[in-house]
Length: 592
Image (cartoon, rainbow, N blue to C red; front, side, top):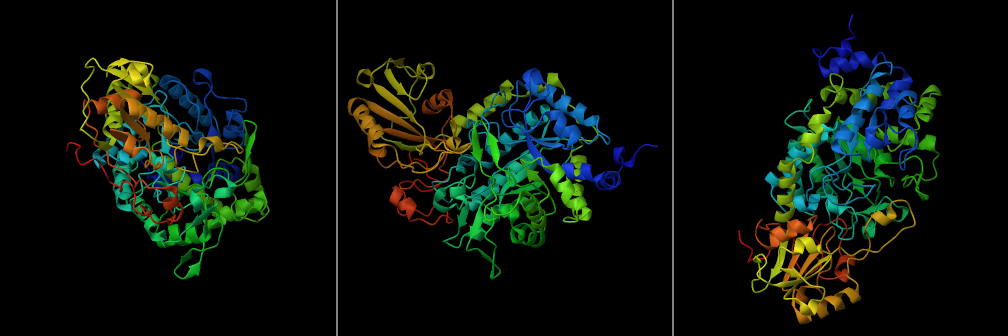
């Protein structure tokens, strides 16, 4: 007789109940770990320790009974599909054949940061979420729908996004993946995003979204990121906690499959007059059980952010466990605390034997393990993974990064360009009118559409300079060099060089805005000043020439000075005094 859990005529809940009763403790515990995995050459399984993965693939699947993996390195679309199929075949060899849920951080834009996102290699390339937020809800929905199709084609069934933290602290290094500073704009963007990825109901054509970082990761003290010990505090000097919570309320109403709490520990926070323990959100029972589960009624999967239990050592560097406020606890005690807080999965960990031992010794009940295992299994059934986890390699090659998808991403890159100043006006530029063009930070091939590229500004009729967002380089801890933090001011030598260029020719400046750079010294030098959030050189040219109309609006304000940033409230969006440009700004001369 066929096992009930294999019968697609049964409901996901019924199939879950049947399978849960058949699983060993080790299999249930394996469900509760969600770590990094990488593909091998040609789409093969990696059977050695990878650059970031901690164990060979066969070890985590067969020996540790794990079946949730956050994929980092992928090959071509065909190779990615081949790898996903090989992984599912390996999982099918286990006793109950529990299929793998492959997840990913965002991988459709420009930023390569193994701790947060991946550049689009093979996938269609779009602006960062900040750039999507500069556009309209329809643009966000189109992006999500296309990203869903591409994820499905290579077997990715869970998105570790959207990130709906409010970018209320201008210095914070994670805001390039947010939808900006405004809670209402973020909420509308979130709903469109979830509709595009998940559809009206979770099913075989859905990619399950894990909305993050509950209850809002934006108000980091001094803008330092909670990946690192010096950024562990989240603060609310303006009393703005409820504002940061608003997008997560909307995510629950819109049916997000999962939630991820951030690393940060709340300082001086009270809920209903009761002080909240000053420990990281993943450890925080008042936040996960009291607020998320009980008050907001969320019964989906809660997966912690990565590496709360053990230090991460890779590539010759260490990143301490993000056990903020509970650094003194042992790994076993940290596991107990996270489970007691109400979380279902340990992100970035694979210490399954430790959790099994805690159950065997009576520190955690098997009934509590069953609660999380049930949520995790039912999501797999709802996604249709038990019925058909495999993908078509030919289709993956045809769908991922297809001309239609890539064209849509290119249009969004160009359209998201935000015109901040256009004196003259100078825009739109006519393509190659015999002008001579000097460029910095831009390829000569892209600039050739605008004129003959010359090597000196003084020989040019027009100069175009693309500037990255300022930051303070750091490289002591693992991943630290990838997180752009600290001051938002351009270095004085750069400003002096731009002044020299502006003195001899007409200057167009593109300011990269992964964070709100202090543009005050740049503004008087540039005839045209634009801001971008992930735009290729070719897409910038398309915007400057008007071939694709630049219609982006600032997703956050641009502060006038670092002094204004330092005295603003970390938890109140758009809170700097007398900003140079307000949130939502676009040059009034820009055509509608």
